[in-house]
Length: 329
Image (tube, rainbow, N blue to C red; front, side, top):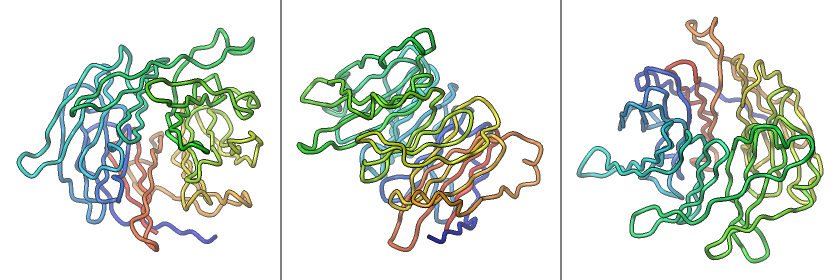
């Protein structure tokens, strides 16, 4: 696999503080970014135009596009509120919201009419009814052991996957200090905790971000110390590991790209690398070119979208600066 991403567009006029989240719309029409300045920006990734801006006084820590929507962004705020932004022809943005948690919301994931939100140790599932989000479930925390029973429980990522053979929706949750991803199967109006072989087999700690492969067969988990590890979801076997200097004890992003054949991850030193999952070989490193960033620490945020068979877009953001870059191969 030969990959070379080149910078296509630089988005520089949206945020006045760190960028905290990035997400492409389902078909790559828009790129949404959230900031610690309380802004959510919606961009045209093709030409870098800033199309819409939502501003408030509370930092926005998470965002996602509603299901396969091209017009609705869901934001998670530091004060525990969830805000929906709808792009309309009549007004710039139609804004609605509700109180969801008593902690800052750092994780969001949607599936059909379901929304999962994570805030500190809380994980809640919401169902959209008559254009309003109604709480459907509150999930119990991860299993305890003698190793982690006294450690803090913090949700680090949420992922909806489809489980065979009945195509049930399953929510995968990762927790800091509780490395085993916990799976909750959605059945009607209840979330049932699943303990698979995979859940029982993982014992590492310090897990942070995670990414599920498009075929839902593999999970990549970043740790806050040494890099990334890839496992098969069933039966939980280790596939490969990628050494990657993290730089600080904090959550770093990881993402499957190219149909799960490649992995991209960043660290707080400004490094972004792409690896071939099958061979474990490093394919490419993306180097930041901005002079003003040479003496700063970085935290990369990543999202990817295929906009045509031969046209793939990779978005990267620096959390500590008002800078997003869209990389195009």
